[in-house]
Every structure is written in C-alpha cells, then in structure tokens.
Length: 345
Image 1 (cartoon, rainbow, N blue to C red):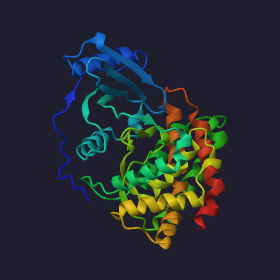
Image 2 (image 1 turned 135 degrees about the vertical axis):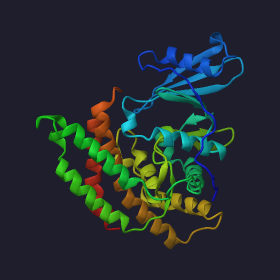
Image 3 (image 1 turned 60 degrees about the vertical axis):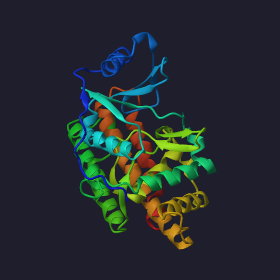
C-alpha cells in the first residue's frame, strides 16, 4: 500500500476568472496565459475535446515547446453531483504516485491540469486482449492506493444523496412530465433499499476506485505500451466489485449496446490478470477468480443504478446537448433485465 500522510494540498494558483461555455476557447486561452505568462498567444493551438457529457474540455498545445495542458470547465451545477474539493485532493495524490499528471491551477468553474499523451481507447478496443490486460493491471494498481480519510465505501451514501436530488428536482413536476412517465419515485426508493441489502451482505473489499472507467477515460500510449486513466472527479473509496463491474458495463458505450457486455470467459481471464497484479504476481486459483466474478456481476447492477440517478439529476440541470433521461431509462432497463439472473449467482 502507498500511504499519503496528509490531506493538505500544496499552494495552488487560483485564477479569478470564469471559463464560459459560450466562449470556451477564448476564455481557456486566458486561463492558460495567466498560469504560464511566458507563453505567447501566437504559439498556442486550442481544440475542444468533444467526448464529455459532464464538463467542457479544451486541449491547449504550445507549438514552441510541445507542452499540452487541459482546461476543464465544469458542467452547469455539476457540484450537485461531484465533490470538487475531493477531486483536487485525488489529482494531487495520484500525481504524486505517478498515476496522473499534475494540477497546475484552478479558476472559478474549473481546473487546468496536465495532458496524458496517447490515444483515447475506443469502445471496440475495450475487449482487445492486450489492452484489456493492461487495464486490469492498472486498475489493480489503483486499488492499492491509500488516501487520507475514512476507508468506507461511498456508494450508497452517494446513491441516497443523488436520489434526494432527483426527488427535489422532480417531485413538484406535473404528472405529464417525462420523468413521471418513465419512473416512480416510490419504486426508486424501495429498489435502492433492496439493492443495498443484497450488496452490503457480500462484505466486498473497499478500495480506492476510479468509478468511471469508460473507454474515453482510458488512454493507451502505444510507444510505451501502457494505459493511463484520466478524469478523477468521481474517484473515491468504493467496493472493488463496483469499480470493475462499472468498467465492464462501459463495454456497451453511451449507446448502451449491452450485447457487448463481456461474456464469462472474457471476464474470468480479465479477473485473473487483475488478481495476479493485485497479489504482486501470484496467480489466483480458479475458485478465487470465480468468487470475484460473482462479486463483480452483482455490483454491475449498482453501476446501472448509479449512472441512471446521475443522468436524472443531469437532465434537470445540464446545458450539454445529451438525452440524459433516455440514458437513465436505458440503464434501468438493463438493471431490471439482468437483476434476477445476476443476484442469483
């Protein structure tokens, strides 16, 4: 285990400016020039990254010295979902361990931080034998990290907080509102109680987890043949099975093509790589691998509950062009489709 002794962050440059979503590139350049005053505007290339559905992201490259940094402007009201102070702590600690690039500064509604060289992994590559083995080993390394604070899972605390937000946003809406056509608040409450009862009794290990390992948050550096994880805003202590089950859920992509969910043979191979890395090179037994398979697939259900509630909250606040409510429906459709099968493992 790697121990970080303190929650104190080093002195961080705080810029008194806001990066507007409407003037994203112009304002991002202002933030970069404030942090790196020796840089010249004529040397900078700024490109908006298009994949995110929570924040606005810009890559700024200095052609003169080859340095790239990222500017992330937080999504509208995203602090309802994300602890931004904890995110800063996560980035600082992970950067000290070589697991992510440094944090350069923050502004009123976002941060500037280092760029990870490489290519974003595409959804079809998630099942590539070599890349998936690298990912399994990298997750095992993450799960050995220790950060200050209680080493208890945030999963159900977060789910209940988000459900409260859902209730606050939609309880006063007309019955004809799309939310009420698709979901029932009473059913959401009772189903969350049921899921918590089923999963907490597993006594799954609690580890430091990324919690959002979709393909776009995995970078493959071909030259160094390694993967890195980006976007640490949801990282926290959580159940091991959730972090892995959530990663497997993301094989379906944002289109929710759940026929792409990895089959048992793939998962057992992947979990074998994970356990061997977690155990410092000692191979796991078939029984140990299968027990983890059972754990992961039960927590796969929690992944759907997590992102469905997240999407419901986003639907009420976000100004990003994405059909969050339909996404929530697709996640819950898969939750109920697999519910009985997976809980019976």
